[in-house]
Length: 116
Image (tube, rainbow, N blue to C red; front, side, top):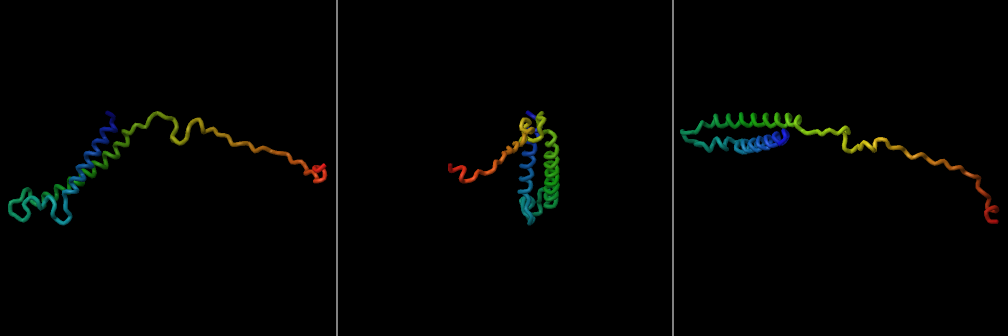
């Protein structure tokens, strides 16, 4: 397995986790924090701590995703081709332009000469 493939798998896993963490959050104060007890006195971790955890995990996963994407650029197999662009073929770089053909013009014959 190549290094780029490993980075690609890690990027997909981190992106999936980031989507899950973002979907758990609710901008109106609900979401996961309201699921743990709601308005009761027995809260698992408290509403504030759950929100802090989700906020920190979102920023951590987003930073990790960005870093993995940038680092994976180093692992891309670029090949050993001498040509920079695939659109330019090495054999076609020496094209020649067609040389214009010069024609000599003869004076036009008179109508009488061509009829006879």
